[in-house]
Length: 231
Image (cartoon, rainbow, N blue to C red; front, side, top):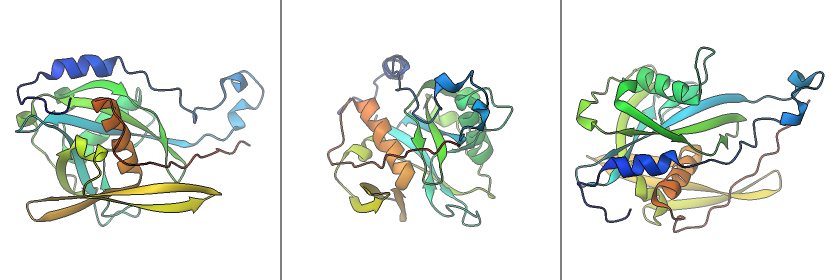
């Protein structure tokens, strides 16, 4: 997909991504315990979904919508994030969660988004299972952002491909539970505003870009493997 012309139709991308089959979630529990007594007592992590909303930029490049979380939030305040949040009881599925949260946070009408696939689940350091949902926004002009000031300070977009390039990037190696893993930091600047995309959001976008562009990143990633407890 690198070097595509501005007029490239999104339909081909939508069709290809709809064929994507993510691996079974390692955090969904053991199906063999479903019919056993006390199966409900197994550890069940909280669940969330985020929206990877892609659209064509003016030069034809694929871009993804990001937010800067409100500085007044109790967790991850001021950090860059994908629109999304925890599952509500009334949500039909992960896509419904991601679309609902995007509408609540940035005023994105779900009718404007074509949901095409879900990706591999990620586990946050707080043991929150996050399901990334890929959606295509074909009519970017139809999107008029309305920010929920209690949750979001800013909205911006970046080229998706930047998460595969070894540019404007730095990394740190850390150790946890005897494992060495890498934390990636991507710097982005626009209109005299500077953002740092890192942590779980960066990991999700690296994976998403690898799926969309069908190639690995230009740098080495070492991911932490969690082993969920069972009770």
